[in-house]
Amino acid sequence: MSDLMTTGEFSARSNLTVKALRLYDAKGLLPPAEVDPHTGFRRYGRPQLALARRITLLRAIGMPLAEVSRVLRLTGPDAAHAVAEFWGRREAEWRAQQSVLAYIRDVFLEDGASTYEVRERDVPEQRVISIQGHVDAASLAGFITEASAALFGHLSAFAGCLSGPPFAVFHGTVSQDSDGPVEVCVPTDSPIEPAGRIGLRLEPAHREAYVMVAKQRCGLPAILPAYDALQVWLDDHDVTPCLSAREIYHPTWDTAGPEEHVADVAFPFIPDRSVRSRPARGAG
Image (tube, rainbow, N blue to C red; front, top):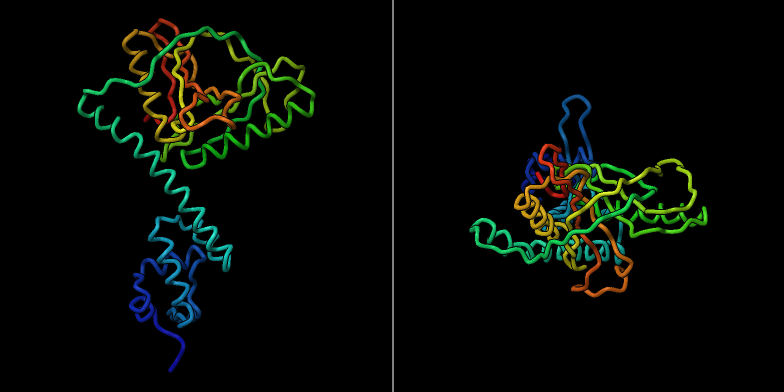
């Protein structure tokens, strides 16, 4: 018996459609064992059924194809650890989504009162070093972490001093379908120069409305009610944002418990509706 099967035979044995097989071939996950150079007919080897089974299982838990490719290059405990790590992230995302479901229900029923207290404060002009990038919701946390590390490293290399809490400015919408841009900023009064992708600018003085956010509510989508509460407040007070929305991160982040205050969401504003509003994180 030949070890090679036609595409149709392999499709039936693997429970993968011909369309899926072509996609997995294009992505380099499951190329056919043999392709006839004249007819283009594809044949798959019987040993490839085990690989097809693994791809099917990984896709069944929602793993993206790019991550499937990475896991398939691993073996034994390394592969099992990668799968467990992925599922841990999925569970964290699910918990975050669960935390906002009740709020969404109240929004649609129009009977939900915000759990956030909106406050106001004046912010002085700040000199900041910053890194800007286009990132979607899936890559936002990683970008903020990486950019912050680079900025603090630059600050340390110049023996510079932090003059205020770091913050991320959302110059455009960040969601599953939109990619910002986002600018991570570190305030400093030290005479530091820009370098490479690290820029230097003045953040203008402004008044802002803000809410305090607990650690467990800082990720998407759990943080969206904080933005919503601020937008409602701005509308109720007839004021318009004059700068992009931002998140301010406090130094208690690493040691704080899930319910402790670690960040603020803020909208700089002026009481003049002629100024055009800027997008916020997750707004669409």
